[in-house]
Each structure stands twice: as structure tokens, then as C-alpha cells.
Image 1 (spheres, rainbow, N blue to C red):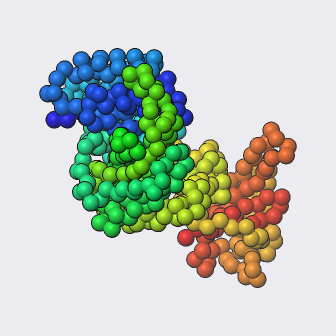
Image 2: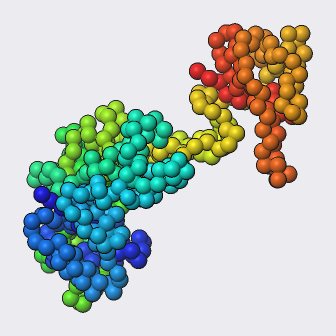
Image 3: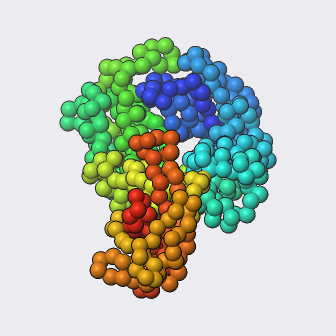
Length: 455
């Protein structure tokens, strides 16, 4: 059985990607496989019967601390999620006891899955769900309905039912892509210019076989014949969005110059130019299961859609592709916004604001002005106490006068009363029209308008 060891430097700064390279060099002396989770944090597989785990962790801590002078914490568990949390306190979780270890953990630790927003954790806490064990005891269908599919996957991870191994299926040699420099690359920029088309070749070769990868090994060979390799984790749902960043981090680490584990200046980084670059995929996944992050599995249609979005990002830039996200607010126009697509669905908000429009929300927003009339054709008004002046009978707009067959409301709202420039008072009214349409109407400054149309 393979166990997972996570080493993290709690005081490490994320921007120091290049400086993290000597730490990885030191870890290479202890284990043949190191997977970089992020600068300052790495994971390693360890056979459960390969030796004393506590002794291995002590050697790892002594090596890293002696090299960097920074505190190093380690965690050992069966799965990656449990090992990440165990590294926060330097714990070794016994074999087969991940679920038992995770159960009493605080509900906020769900954020380590990358699938849960802090607001959702606070909502769960307000509901009396303060531990991962209590969260896992909730009905799976109820979790998915209330918080979405991402939260359901996080629940399975917290229960020890989902785990991503550190060493899944390896790639065939022909999937590895290599480029040789006509003139050796002496700067990071030169190497990155060559690495971009190399990355495209790698991803295209995988896509042609309906594959993607969970990690990639970056290898550089110098003019003096030295070879350096490092394996980086990728999100297989969005490898193109991350591959360029991982390659940049690695090349900066190799070529910016740093002190190695023996105390000498790394001559390859500072003096040697790169003659050959190689990218080798590993952790292969089929495209049907390939639209997954660390934990989740998406359907084939989602995978194809996200592949198109990643391709568009590659053409126009990462900030050019926008996706709709949930936002704070009461009306339909305020409850959604736009944000750059990051390769995964944004979890829903923990809950609407007090006084917000309940679900289902209108499918389309509207701005057109209308008239709401009573049976005699007089315009309806809403008093300061929220009472209608008469029973709604007709909605007149666009030259039509459509009868109202059902209505609900009104609901008066008094927003930002403390700010004279932003203060707003209005009333909402829902109506079902005789032609089959349903609308949300707003009365503000004694004028009615459409706030949204329901399907």
C-alpha cells in the first residue's frame, strides 16, 4: 500500500517560486518522486512497509530546515487530503484511519479541497455542522441540493471515499515532446518562448488520443550535458491554463541562480544555457473522466465545453473568457456578476441576502417601462406601508393591455437608507399574465418597470 507524505513550509512566500527549487533538490535525495502541489508545499508517495515513517519525516524536516532555515511540517496519511491537513500539525495518521482522523476536524478545513467557499463553511457552522464528521453524516442528496455538486464531492473526500493517488498510470514514451535549441537558451524568456509551442504539442498529442494528464515532468538538458527534471501537478480539467505557469516557475528556478544543498552556486542555473527542453505527461486520464480537478469527475459534454474555453483563453488571454458568478444582492440583476473563468465552476453562495428575491429567479432581466392598472384603468400605487391602492387587473406595455390572472406582493424595500446618494426605495410585484408570461415588476419613483421575465 502506498501512503502519502506532504511537506509544507508554513512561512514560505508564494512569489518565491525560483527559491523553492533547492528545497526540491534536497527532497530528491530522500525520495525518487516528488510532486509539487505549490511553491512551499510538496507531496511524496511512501510505501507503508518501506520503513519507519516517523524516521523518514525527521530526516525530511532536518534536511529542509537545515537548507532553508525555515520551519518544515510533515503529514502522513493514506490520501492526499488527509495528508495535507495532517501536515498542519505534523501528524502521522495510522494506516486505514483517514476517516477517523478527518471526522473531528473543523468544518473550515473543507476549504483545503478547493471545492468549498468560506461562506459555505460559515453557513454550515450556523446550521450546527461544525466538524467534517458531522458534515459527512448529512444525506448526500441534501448536500448536493443545498450546496451543489462540488460540495458533494468535498463530502466524499472528507469521508475518505475519494482519493487521488500520487502515481497513476504512466504515459507512453511517444507522448513525450522535446525541442532542441538551434542556439542555447541563456535567459528564462528565451526558454519560455520555446516552451510555449512545446506545451501546445504535448496537449494536442494527448487530445488526439482522448487523453489529458494530472501532472507533467519538465526536463532541461544543458550544453554541458547536465540534466534536471521536476514533476508538477496539473489540474487535468484545465491543463493548458496551468502548464505555462508551471513551466515558467521551473525555468525560473533553474536559470535564476540559487545556492544548492551543498552550499555552492548552482552553475546550471547561473552559467549553463539550456540546449534541450522536454515535457513528459503522467497520470493519464481519459477525456470522459478528464474534466476533473483534483477530486471531481465531469461528464463528456462539460469536458468539451471547457476544452473550448481553454482554447479561447489560449488565443485571447486568461482574462478574456468570463463566466457568470453568484454575487451579493437582492434583485436578479444584482445576484450575478462576471469573473474570469479559472477552469472550474464557481460554487454557489452560501445564501441570499435578507430581503432578496427567492428562487427561482427570473430567467431574463428587463428594463422596459409598463403600466399596472386596476379594473377601471387607473394606475396602481403602493403606499408607504406596502399596500396596493387596488387589485391589479392589467399590465399595459408595447401597445398591449394584457389581463393579470394571478399576482403576489407587493414587497417594499428600503435599501442603503444611511447613504443619501445610494438610498433606494421601491416595491416588487409578481404577476402571471393571461398570455402565459410571468413577470417581476418594480415600482420606483411612482413608475412601474419590468425587473425580469420568468420562463
